[in-house]
Image (cartoon, one colour):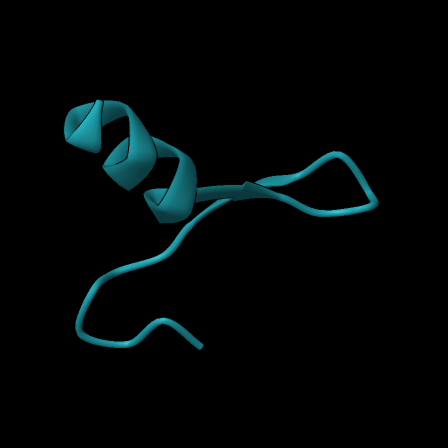
Length: 28
């Protein structure tokens, strides 16, 4: 379950439909 949670947190879809990968070092 934790692995799935990590994936969702690492990958975020913007309103434009663009997939952005967020690094744990710089989540911004």
